[in-house]
Image (tube, rainbow, N blue to C red; front, top):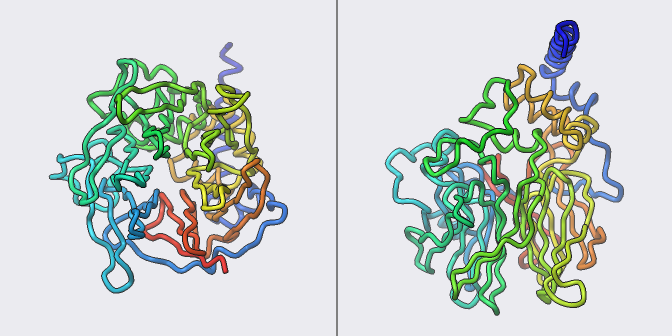
Length: 406
């Protein structure tokens, strides 16, 4: 690249940064410019959700109920797993994923996640009532019905450490766990894990905006960098064997097994879609697209009918659509002088909101519930249907939501 082109590119990037800074001062202005389009057939109802605050904690991403109906259990940002015991008793500590918790005293300390752990996916085994945990930094873990310190099951695959364990589902009859490793290159927020392969960080852009270095926001760097190293894996509880089922996924995230166990779903967050791996039948071993989505999917949870609830972190607007599906544009955004919060604001279209989509067993849209203006619910990470209610987790709020379906 010649010097004139370099100067022109730098000037253009600076001009874009200056222009966008004007819009950063007002989320409403930014939303008017970059807001996502409406989802056809959606119902703006989630603002009616009841809020259950999680005191002295942040980011209840995944929710689970045990075989006795207790819960939900929620994994929070300081590495703990809490249990809600009802309105009268509130929350209690149930489990942790590491014993190294001397400095894990703040509800939200991103720079400590690799030490304290970050439970992202929770699922109870229906027969043993053991809680299986996908911890972003510490791999696949399990804790007994009485809680306490979780035991490590899988921390590496094929001789390489898991870098970003994200979600899981369990085939209780066959004692098999399906789980995701979001990326083999990027971690969630930090690259300070002593087990990580620092020399593999070759995909990072040469220049990053403030707050986007090794200490913070690596998941956002992964998305904008066009990373496609995510994996869907299988762990056999009896043999302790791990098998890589699908590779090359774009930010592999939520996991859900079909009711008849004929297929397993995996969310590709930056691909804005859900992929299906057939486990049985004439298509066994094949991977296809189960659903294209109007936003960025997080966790997937199956209800008692066999339908699937998908939580969208946000809908996709014109800028996020362009940046995520054109790697060069995403990498260019990473070079702009924006903080993590500013980049995140650009991608969500300026204004927090909440979207939950219910899909049939065939992948067709059955319902779309939203809090379009983010009045109550924001950035849902998981939607769990139980007893006529939706229990809604969020990776970015200090509360869960309960929405009455009836």
